[in-house]
Image (cartoon, rainbow, N blue to C red; front, side, top):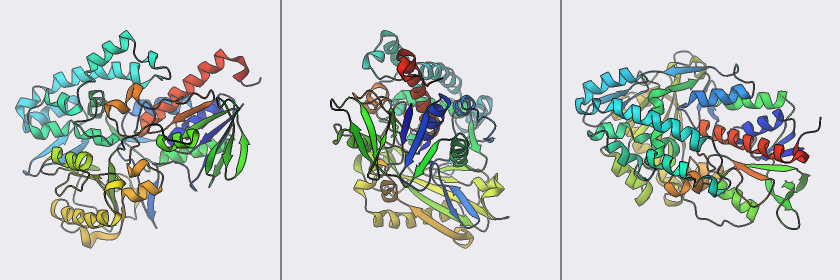
Length: 488
């Protein structure tokens, strides 16, 4: 059996390895000159830093999949603790801690009334994490009736999925700063706290329960390891290869070939790994649904001759109001005058990223997707962000800067990210769970999908989980149809 993977992002790479492990011939086509999708480095001479994702969550999920693919010894990870400081404009700082007891003590110092609520929050979230992982993250909902079961409806009610993350957090914590500390994590997947379903409260819970980790060498090292394994195992990789469409059977219910750079390659099955709105247009020749994009990111990269004045790998600097910032990004579609922003300085713990004594840093500001702001407006805004960095992070930033680079949502859009949003389609209620594109999204018997815009959702571990869910579906289909099983 020949499986063709269209797209070499993390979902496509994991799917390729699973298909190879199942004994199938695998060919992967990627239009860019490299694999990895959002996992990439921005490098300049002897400096390098992750271009995209930086915060490594759900390490058990990542490690389980790597173990299933016999790659468990190829990646090393370091646990980060404290997780990160949150610096507020009133001069206060809340340290987010990995351990539950440590976080309890820090909250006692910061807000006693909310410290008392923290144990109940963690107990409730642990129960919901177990329910959500088993019932939703680990399952495909190709048939909608598989989602709308009595048991699942009970679980949704227990998860209070009808609530937003913001509303749920406010039931536990009263200090506005603490509320922000437990709801800003929706931005990890490109959603607003007041529009993201409460099931995503599992993300801030996981920070404390499972920890935040750093992949030694950078998160993009994971993509390098996967590509090395693909090459070792005989998977055919063709970069610079644009998939233009599918040749369908007469009844249009079966894909017979993939059209690549004007060539037709026969296939037995096709796995589409890309932004789903673009995949839908490619397969159906039209887009049948309007999707809401995730937030965009304005990214600033720095090569420095000295480290920034922070002791932490991850730091958050909060604006006057996270609510107002989110209103600007998601509803008013404008650049917030006083935004919250994130600073990443991995060279504090990884000497491989910069020359001795030097450093690299990355600054992220949530912004509207590319349709609403011009590239020049983003560039002008970046200069304002640099001023805020000098004011709030390091007065010596300009003197320390060897080089800097700006990446706007317009570059993300040119790279193929949906409307320049950084996380696929937004994790709103009606773009989550059964309402999200599924791993078998079309009435075509041999076309499948993985990626950030496909169930179970965005974020590197969750996209990997989506590839695992697809693998399980494919193996079940093969058991049901002996003609699909590899020859012995």
